[in-house]
Length: 120
Image (cartoon, rainbow, N blue to C red; front, top):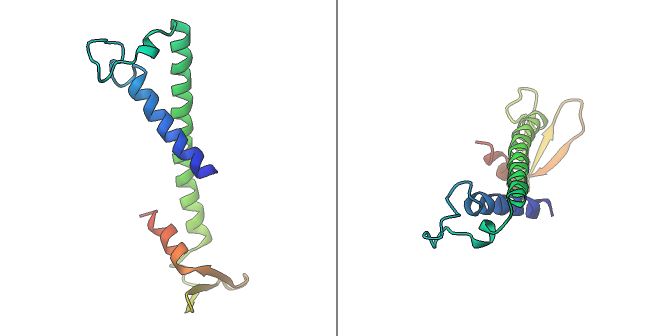
């Protein structure tokens, strides 16, 4: 559900900036490819409300990108692959992490590597 919301946010944001007179001149009837008759017929207040919505969606996208960077750093602290005290054992498709006094963790190698590859 969250992933669907992220895709909707991205799609909505780019639709709005491309068709609501932000990135392109969508009010010029001579440019049939970019002209947005529905947007042109809105009142000034309605257009301003849409600009506020564009700002809110852009802010949300920015915050989500910032959160992704925070999660990346947090994951690196949770799974310190190069930490000198860690004992890595690969056994039957699992990576078992012995973190000294912490309990043994078992992580699927493909999902772990897939996650870590997104950070580089």
